[in-house]
Length: 83
Image 1 (cartoon, helix red, strand yellow):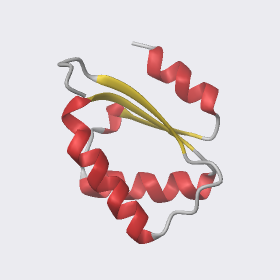
Image 2 (cartoon, helix red, strand yellow):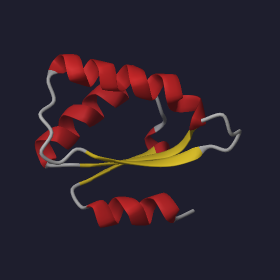
Image 3 (tube, helix red, strand yellow):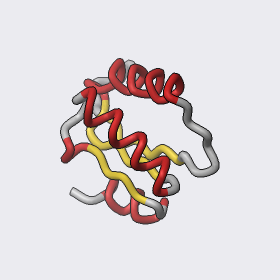
Image 4 (cartoon, helix red, strand yellow):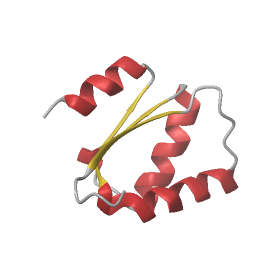
């Protein structure tokens, strides 16, 4: 993270149980890194995606154009490398 280049990040949350405390910590962690993120793709089951999206949008950490939520990892990877 010492490099000045912004990063494209893929996070896989399949089979991950997210409590409200974990979601808050996750949002804070992304918030600390937000100036180093150009694109953030998050894959998971529909319930997980809904929870994570709600938290990240509520905290206004990244713009909606910088985030992509999907159920299929391949869709997320394709979005990350697209311009």
